Amino acid sequence: MVCYNHTVSANKHNVARSLTAPQHVWFHMARALLDIRVLQREYLLAITRALTAELDLHDLLRLILQAAVQLVSGRAGMIVLSEPSRESLRVAAVYGIPPHLVDHFAPLMEGLPYREGHEHEVIPELSRRLSEIAHKADLGLTKVLRLPMISGRDVIGLIYLFQSGNYVFVEDAANLLQSFAEQAAIAVRNARLYQQTQTEKQRLNAILEQSADGVMILNAALRITVFNKALSEMTGWLASEAIGRQHDEVIRWQTLRTGSDLAQALADDWPLPGAAHLYVEGEFARPHNAYYQPVQDRINLGITYAPLMDVNGRMTDIIANVRDLTRYREEEALQKTFISVVSHELKTPVSIIKGYASTLRRQDAHWSPEILHESLAVIEEEADNLTGLIDNLLEASRLQAGTFSLEIHEEVNLEKIAAETTRKFNAQSSKHQFKLAFPPDYPTINGDERRLRQVLNNLVSNAIKYSPDGGTITLRGEAHTDHIMLSVTDEGIGIPKHEQHRIFQKFSRLDNALSRKTEGTGLGLYLTKAIIEAHHGRIWFSNNPDGHGTTFTFSLPRH
Image 1 (cartoon, rainbow, N blue to C red):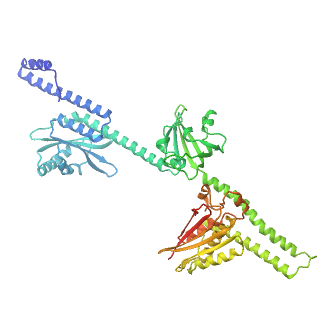
Image 2 (cartoon, rainbow, N blue to C red; image 1 turned 90 degrees about the vertical axis):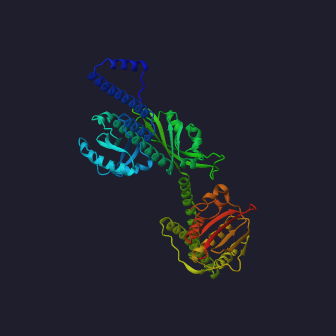
Image 3 (cartoon, rainbow, N blue to C red; image 1 turned 90 degrees about the horizontal axis):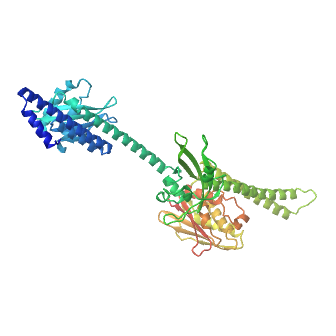
């Protein structure tokens, strides 16, 4: 309540004693009105300070409601807000009403919409409903006043004020309290705008954070302000470590595929008015730290920098979209390798076939039956090699097109297929010994026998190619309750760690002198993995514990 200076109050009392009776009445009425206006002003000042201090909406509405109730000597009050999405009203703040009785006031919010200029028409019905509520809830409320909270042309809520006993709202109570209703409307509007802003910010942050592409935002000083999850996974930098650092501290290029990087472009006056985005691509070295141990030390990144300009044409931020191009560049390199390898692989059997055929066609020579038979056998073998190469290319094409299929047969005996495969290769290699290790109860399975034979051919052929000094190649089988396993172990050169991630990729071959001398298209393991997975199995590999050779293992379901 308002506090007055003691001397001022004494002077007012002295003045009052010197007045006549009619003057005395008017004096006290004027003084009461002045007190109310002063009180109203002080309440509004307190509410305005609360608005500028950005208090919680619920607390602010309760402050407004409490001031409005006290200003009219009311007993209780309630503020309800409209919910546009639900086309309903909800209680946002109460004063003087016990929490467990709030639901009793729901009838006051139903079926009595506010219409400007017609509020006097609904007061009798509001009073009748209040009487029923007060009786049920055992509250001594007798009078109700309803004030609209208007924002623009929309009624965003209502303030209900209740009195008890013989108190009666003065005629201009609505006008007196209109400022409180306006303040409440401003509070709700600001809160909703703030909530919309926060919701939109959270949505944009979620989009940036969950984006599959890396996103980085730099301020005008080139310090990182945003660093999303995808970019952390690409680069190995934690967002908490990257944010606040200079761009060049985090993005360190080993080599560039483009003409310049961001620093060079800025030195050359990028961005010019209307300039296109800046694209930088190169090889990036991932850091080693306590949080991140990369599989690949280096990756290829492509970064598109987009400047954000203010109305004066000054750059305020740079938005960088980052993509990991490592696989794309590897695929590009593999495609080039594939064209080279396939050209060589196709050329070799074709040249041999043509050479033998040209020799046999010579009219000045008379070939013995043995030479004819031997020459035709070579032509047939090279034709088979050529057919196998073409079949592999077609299989890879079917996989790419999604038309790869199996012909399932019952009772496929992998142990038998393994024995036949080793017999075939034993006749072709004098440096290698073959060993079969299968348990007596090794079961048959359902599968595509031709393709599973292709799997074993590919694995054993690889084992021979990459163990040029010979050694033992072991085919081992294991039977389990719901699946069987088969492994092929050699004693060769093994697979370097930096090559392991791409061993099952198409057109992939080990990058060493041995592989460059060894025939092959790099499709064998790619097709092998596809065949195993089409059988709902899986395949993996590991270098042998003694450091010599590799073991490829696949498992297939028994049923």
